[in-house]
Length: 366
Ligand code: NVA
Image 1 (cartoon, protein in one colour):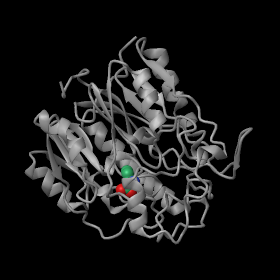
Image 2: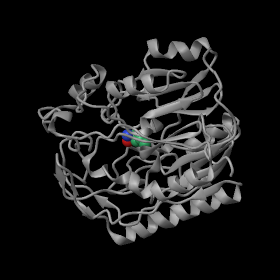
Image 3: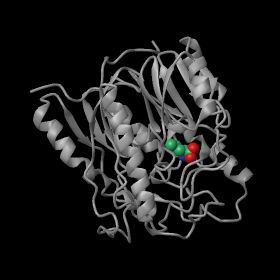
Image 4: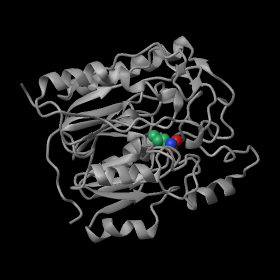
């Protein structure tokens, strides 16, 4: 019996990780909170069904290459077991005609020390996504006597979990930003809702983005569930589509964070970092003007890197500005081509979920 699961942050030496797979991925049909989350000018509006096979194959080639590079750097890699995502989700409360993918494991699984939590996700099409990871979690449970396997309270995702009058195509960008600033989001506070990728783990402190995929009730759940950790709600008023923290606020090593310059952390929320001598620097500009076709995310996937240890980071190979900044910040960069995988749910951090990093639960903000 060995220790398999342990990870308290995104920067200590990475030894074991899950890398997603694009097989059978679909663009999901519209559901109560999707219109709000797909940018107004996206070519994906109104489109749903299986993604073109050649795009799946290209994404898988880059995911496989990432797994290979990780292996060459001493990291054990596990892969999920994709479902046939092109099938409806039917519960007593709703029906939606397709699932999505298991490419971005970071959204679904949250590792806190010896525990992996299956998140309480707000997309109906992602209701069963955790099943793709069950064979792995079951194995970790069999082999690691200290592994704690948790499922956050399952949301019912009935109509009362969403504001139905929230979205209107005529809403301007300014109005959207005003809503973000007022913390007015499409999900209600009816039940606990969160995506794991909204949670930034820094040892004893969890910084959780309040946005379109995570609500305040989730923060309350974290507070009660982890009384020994400190829970901080953070929000980034410059982001009109606040979904997942890892293209906005990214730790590189203890004391150093890159922050999306269009989504700066407000002054009052910076205090805890400044008081503890953490440096928050503006991330470099993305190298691309647009995301690749059929992609949900913004060009800021440029900063969605995977840190292997305090001195080593994997960056997307075409993100020249980001790589140059990493170099200046004292990081050794391993470039990996990954843009073909972006449409399936994000970049290098999104595409992975921590299983084991060295190190324990440090208190960085005493
Ligand atoms: N919602 C973010 C992606 C987070 C990985 C963005 O589009 O920038």
